[in-house]
Image 1 (spheres, rainbow, N blue to C red):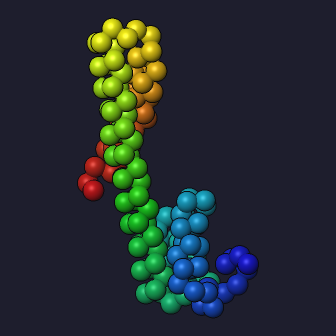
Image 2 (image 1 turned 180 degrees about the vertical axis):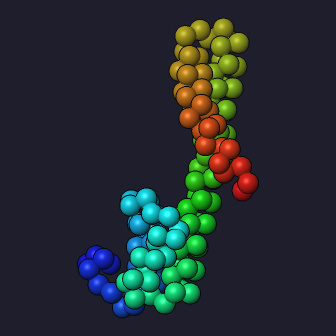
Length: 117
């Protein structure tokens, strides 16, 4: 049963938070837009603002952790590849070097957006 087909006030807290996260992730809505949407569905204004800001904070924290994890493992793969290369293992070292480099390069531009956490 979809939350969008019912009034929000009859949903559980978990459903409301999932609906807000869906609006932010799938529909690319801002915190203000989600709050407005929740209010229009029948949630009181203070609750709508609390839910939307809490979901936004949670999503930002999760993204920041994922970026840091990608940087760590990218660096780990790269370093392992260089160590293997230095040990004269040859072409087998290229895979971790390339994979680590890709993971690092993919994560670095995103880090500046989430460096405050």
